[in-house]
Image (tube, rainbow, N blue to C red; front, side, top):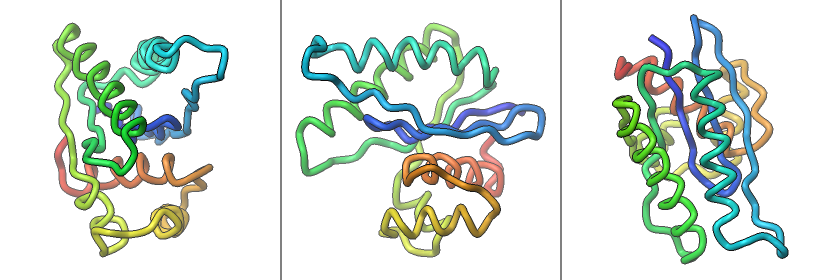
Length: 150
């Protein structure tokens, strides 16, 4: 089964397995000063359309956006999650959120693992994540594989 794992953030980590091969990366949706306030969401929507074509997922998993200290970060993650959910509803594509602590505990043994711990855990599994966002997406991908959610 082909599936897509997302760590939703301004720098969105993504990983997917297509025909047994893992692909991953990170895409930045940071707003430039001159951009419209909604520009990051428009860019995310366009990117999401493209990655769906590339990954051909039969199911999408995402790191559930929880409460964050900063209002803007909460707004961005919630907005990206809404785009994913709406798009998937339109395509009748199954989606499932996985709590952050569950992913971290599976990857490192600690539900409150630090960003560096997540990167190190994925490197120990043979991946070379560019940052913690890509590491989180890869960890979610591995969790899905091992637990058998896909």
